[in-house]
Length: 384
Image (cartoon, rainbow, N blue to C red; front, side, top):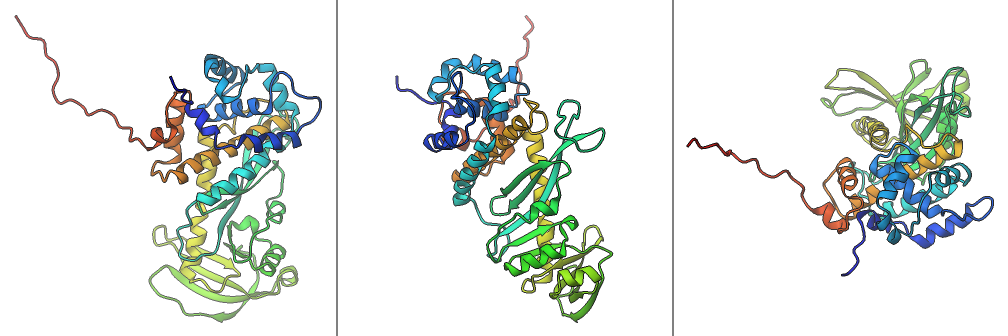
């Protein structure tokens, strides 16, 4: 009988083994691993993400229950102590590098964003992940609380996390934003925490556009008022110059202020940008699309294991987060390459129920799964 790989095995084929082993050799510390490999670590931790396992004992027990199907995955027996030790000691940089390789593949099949303009569009934000300070003593955030912060630049072409940085909970949002290197013509949507005029001037010099909300205390002078189409929520479209003592020095270039009133909520917004070409309503829509990054944070916290951790060291936590990001890219690649209408959540639920089934991954994903029709008649007991 011909061998058929499991669903998990077919999914992991999306990770070229020779590239993984090459990266593993470059991200190794200490003596040669004997009891388990980095590939076994990745398979175990990726399985934990896909199946929602919440402890190392749970992960190992699940693998032991499927030990007959692990050989074709290139995985031997995984011991809890060995997995914990590798998570603690071996650099998480391996999975950061793997994330970069998978991101390149995903970009090749990802759809474009929903706007008519061709400029690359990215939303920038960060989220906190709370940790118990008594257990994760390296993650001090306040005197009574621990936390880390995940900084993400979400590419709206496929909603891919194209920029990811993990820092301490006190890490500065704007400091991480300055690490961005975007191609000329890119548009970045960010909230008011990223309104730094020195950074904005730097972006303008690179040919990159920023769309953000204008802070209330910013001093400026109106240089020009432009006409705009009425009835679309736009209330003003102005060219301004900053007049504050520090802001004038940091950003002496003309900027654009767009006023917009949301027809649904009646709330009035004031946007600041260095883009003078797009319509004022498009500027408002770009900032509204920034909500997609909030939905991304909500999704990964609800569907992946990045709130409860299988190790307490900094390296173990970062290893788990980067593997979670790799799993997100694998799910996205499946969705894009197979042109599925099913949501990522639906895809993940389907994989959870079939990880170790011996069947075609493509057939599984493209088959419509529906409940059988409800019968309208019922059996009745006949009286003698």
